Length: 145
Image (cartoon, rainbow, N blue to C red; front, side, top):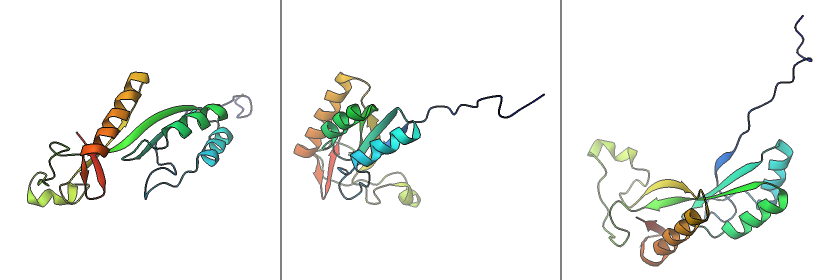
């Protein structure tokens, strides 16, 4: 005899890998304490931050996650320069009919989400982000290459 109550159906674990925190300039909605409270309520053991163009919240994200018992994954939604971050020239992506495929809409950058897998990866993200802020500005975007 089959009984739904007899078998416990477990949900596979789920991890958000693309969350903009309160530190994602002009685009962040998730306040850290509220986010980690929600993770605990939903049984989420891991979550990733991927703020737009910066790692300003990485320290607070890491320590707030640890305090809440959630494993933090640190990443960035990078603005990637089409050539060199030092080159301020916009380029045309593909053919003219593909302009709608250019996420920036203007040839100045594209997006790429990158996560750190370990301490070395985190240091590399900090270096890329720092270089973007020091040398990669195009209008309001710190671009990396």
